Image (tube, rainbow, N blue to C red; front, side, top):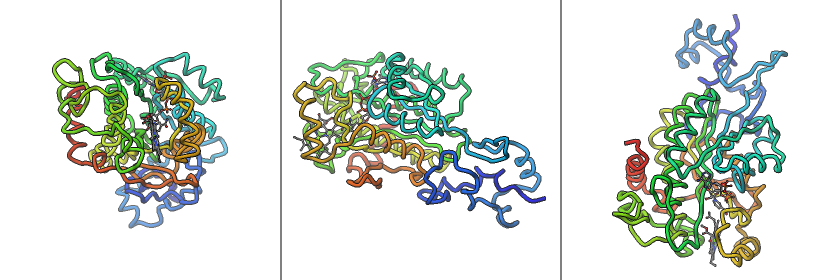
Length: 395
Ligand code: NDP
Ligand code: PMR
């Protein structure tokens, strides 16, 4: 009996090894490819079979069952099933544009994890996202209870989780006084970092047990948190210091509301939160990539100067920022283009490498970018992880 190579697809994929996906380099439609495109996966001889550590009996058993991550059509043609991707903050800007880009392929079902249910529904509708391609689920990242509730609801839905995108953020550049999350953390760090930290930790097992060929956890970073760039040197600069404020709970009662223990500064708190996002991605990579095969990635999608992120900035800034980025720094990207970029990090077969901070050059080609010294500090990442675990009640 001829062995059906297709029946052992997932155990054959070598996507767990950094930068060595054995998916065809030419294949740009990873989502929904026909099986012929996975030709390197064919088991050719007994020795290969041995390395797969599968007996013929096991293979027969797997042949009979549905192949993981795969649907069989009535014509017998096998295609990858629709991927399920959760995107936080998909009600506007980058998150919405990414949801649109993924939904338009017909190969993804997008779970829009948003704090304002109606806004998200309306946004999806006006973006033209087909009803069958998205679900809105309530998530308020500024409440750890809400994060836990969201995770429970998602688990109860019975859907597999293939990709998680931590995209939502708040930016308070003009705030004179700090504001706080439901749990009493300074709002920017609490929402952008701690909410996502808990969410990712609670959903890690779901990602791990997904049978999708490439599962990913993506946390959106930014150039402004990286002090090895011009943009990252515009004051106030990101700096987590020795994390003394964070260790004190960021509540402002017995300690500072800022991670480094300094005076409140909304713009700095946002940039610090982006450093936390990039450090967290790398710490996930170090702790879990080998064991789980999950790809952990971060990115700077370009300067999307028109989004709601700048809603609290003064009107003059909002007027001048887009032309400044378009014509002076040339760092500007449209929301649509940024969505396509993040969608690549979600699903492109060429971007399976884990532990990478992706950026795009002037011709919109992706490349592995360098993080600043602080954003790639291994010891700081470990410490941040441990302090964050305590604050969100995981340790
Ligand atoms: P937007 O303000 O358009 O999007 C942010 C999203 O986060 C909104 O959907 C918002 O919801 C949501 N959000 C805010 N607070 C919460 C919360 N407590 N719970 C759940 N969702 C919440 O900004 P962008 O699209 O620009 O930002 C998206 C990501 O891109 C951020 O991580 C940002 O740091 C990053 N980024 C942006 C750049 C830019 O130039 N704009 C550059 C580099 C990175 P709601 O719609 O209800 O307000
Ligand atoms: Mg910046 C190559 C130059 C470059 C780029 C790519 C950005 C991106 N910025 C650049 C340069 C400069 N900016 C310079 C020279 C200045 C001084 C005039 C400047 C100023 C500036 C301000 C006041 N830039 C800003 C602000 C903001 O309030 C934005 C911010 O920091 O949000 C946190 C911002 C940004 N500049 C960027 C990007 C991507 C942002 C916004 C969003 C983000 O990082 O998430």
